[in-house]
Image (cartoon, rainbow, N blue to C red):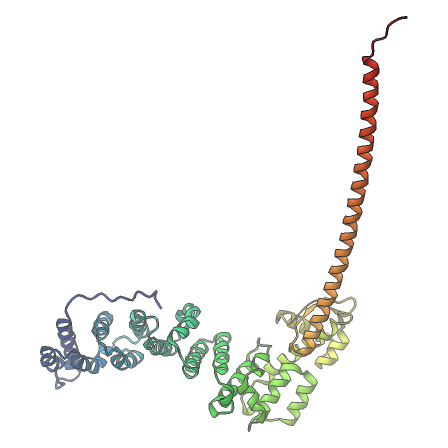
Length: 435
């Protein structure tokens, strides 16, 4: 989307421009249907009577044929229509009739049609006041064109302004949810799973607790769970389990979804395999890839194993990793490398000692237990700092004491030297007389 200009410069008075556009619409219609009624003849009497909005209604109704205008004339024709419409006090009545046409295919230019539509839609968006609620509907239309044409990269730079726009438009939860889902779909259309999940989660969070068990909330919660579990590099699930709509799955007709999510949130491979034994057809029915989920669970299990071990010896024998992941000893190093690449653990392999030396590990769930551990580490750190400060203070006092003693010794030496000097001077100044 271009930088907002808030202007659309077209010369001419309303009546002249309206008749010009009407004639253009008539010319296109006659090529498609020679018997079509003339828009220009219909708006002439209305303009003479000063009924501009009635004339605009005729123009807007007939403007659908502009989608078949020659490519080189398309933008100019639509800009003229927009220029006329924005002069009306009933702008919000006419815009909803124009915008759907711009979301439809441009028959005169199948290849460049989406770009032409986006050009007009962004023009409309930019000339509207920043706090106009009409901007919300124009932006939704932009999203539909972006999604259908796979042009998400054009939209991406503008998403940084989204939160500001939402505040200006004063949208409610339902409108925000619709907006976030459209963005999620647009991102998914070009394979950007990260961005798609981000806005899917934002949509889920707009559902209030009172509506967490509604059919829409239920479907959206399952969709979010499926997206998170299927994503090969998404390993944090507490963002989902904290949502009221996801929590409601526990007591719904599909509790298996919540059970599965909880397994990936905090449990290990052994618990997961037991769950699979009791739900043998769940993955296939829900079109979840067993290989993706198994790999993810093994990595999460290894991360949990490393997190526990960092509290003790900070090393894991290969044999223990092999048992926990149900893999052969020869595959241990491959899985350790994978878990490091995933960013879940940092460490170093020791082939000589057949151990994995852990430098850092990621907690899968950060709850009360982890806060207690952090508090303990902070207390230890504070005690260590207090000990260091005490040593520094003691050394400082010792240094000050030594400096004071040295200063006194220096003053004593200087005072003694000065007294001796004065006696010598007096002796040298005496005049001796002979008897």
